[in-house]
Structure formats: structure tokens, C-alpha cells
Amino acid sequence: MGPWEIALILVVVLIVFGVGKLPQAFGAIGKGIRAFKRAESGEDEEEEGVDTEQKVGEKITVATGKKPVARGKPDSQ
Image (tube, rainbow, N blue to C red; front, side, top):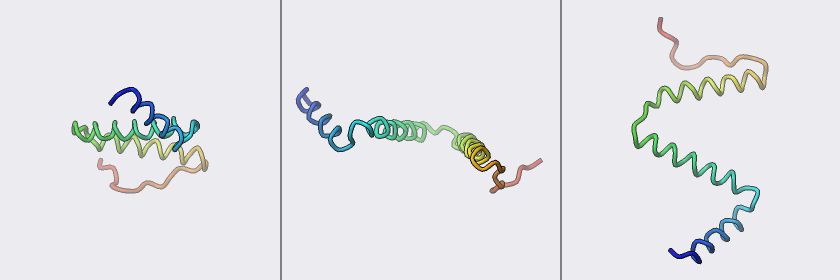
């Protein structure tokens, strides 16, 4: 691919997404690529899931002022 083809692709992307949506579009693409690389390398998904659940719980607490109800497996002691 030469410089003219790359320029044409960039112009089409600007027209389709608009200048304001470009950071969101490329951010979503970056997240997808990172998720693919993590899945490909076989990183532990459980640890990431716990972190995500904790972050979601914190957001719910901040937004509603109430703690979310626990779901899933109970903690074994």
C-alpha cells in the first residue's frame, strides 16, 4: 500500500466516524486488540473477572449510595 491509498482510507474513516468519534472508535479497536492478545496468550481470566466485578460494584455504590447484592459462588472459608 502506498501513501495515496493510506490517505484515502484515512479520509474515508474521517467521513464515516467524524472527528469527534475518532478517539472512541480507535479506543474500542485498541481494547479489542488487547483482549485478543490476552486471550491468545492464555492469561488467567478469573483474576481479571474479579477486578471487573469489584469495579462495577464500586460504581454502583457511588451511583446509588447502596451496596450491590452479591451474586455467584459464596466465599469458601
